[in-house]
Length: 355
Image (tube, rainbow, N blue to C red; front, side, top):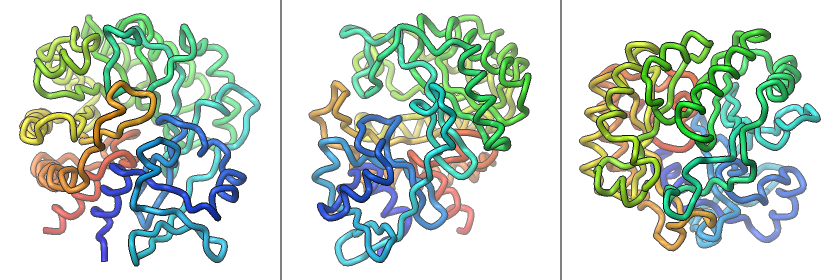
């Protein structure tokens, strides 16, 4: 029987296709599952493990994993085996912009994308793995977003808010936006706030971000090798490798051990480069996450193969050992690492802890 680690790695890397007799039923219950991209990926739970699975992308149509509804329950079929899967329900409707940009990713964890604009979204600057569809020239205005959040938080008051999206104008402007948003939220809620952002030029802003009410920082390096970063992330790589590590060091000082995290993408770079970077990050209190490359329809690397599930398992098992070694419990940080739906190191941490 497949282990949870094997099942989750396969679903993350290869996606899931929907059986013909289940598709109409599924989309009637969860209409946004028909949409492509990370915002509308399927967020679900199998056993105690969260997952963020693609079902609408071209590559997922070839997946060996099949979703079927049987006896009023959904199951993932993997060959002769089947696994019960539970989808996270839609958030309570607010009649605001949040209905389109907020999704429940885990028990008590809401992901929100206020900025679908990005200063790197040009042919010569865009990250080639990115599938973000930039629809707006600027993020949602703070007053409008806070008003919407206040309505939502009255219905789900204790949930964690995890913010993500493109980098509007430049990293410094985006940091200012997140600070203003956090201050607005703090006027009506004490909920945990995690934010994904590129390191600002002036690292003193990190302390200001913490003081504004942000609890956890997510700064994604994504590619370990500096030359490969320039090729895959031509715009974002202008923020140097050295500056990222200065930002990591300062952020750990400000937010605390394990309250800073960073994604590395598996499947498009040598795994030993990833693991070397993971140890470097973990040793300084940054929680590394290995997210598998998935060839989403809207990304430039659409023609590449997805990350091999076994490669993801091999890397993540070694990462799990590092997390135990450096006392980086997945639930230390609010937000992405606590959810763990886009990667498998949380499951591998538990396995390493048991051994």
